[in-house]
Image (cartoon, rainbow, N blue to C red; front, side, top):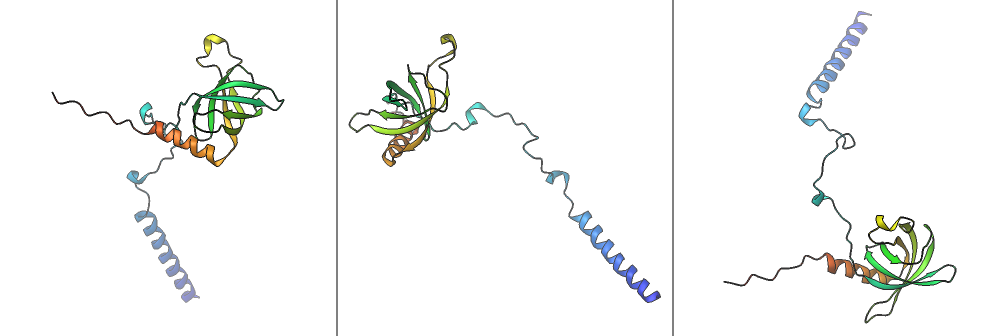
Length: 166
């Protein structure tokens, strides 16, 4: 009985020492403390905020609604998957339509799109550019390549001409 008691005490002593050793030497230090970013609000410089690549091509286009009505439009701004168009036609948010983009030296790009937002209902004094935000639903490979090329060309840094020697 005494031998079993001594063996139990020995095992518990070793276990206590190992736990104490682990807690004391492997505990996180104050300098190692990790704070989740959700609790920390960092103020960012506006120039450091990433802006999605966007181009402002001002392409003429024709909208064809599901009802078969056509209207003239202009693609003022385009990203890889969306665009801002100006048009006198009011489309409902969520409405899907066909848009043909008319380009010089190319056949028209045929795109299927959906209205994601609109400022058509706002008073004129509150709107800078009246139009709609759209997202592309179906695009051909040639349209995707052309839009990407346009965005990359406008996003490329403009090289300044070297200053003339005085």
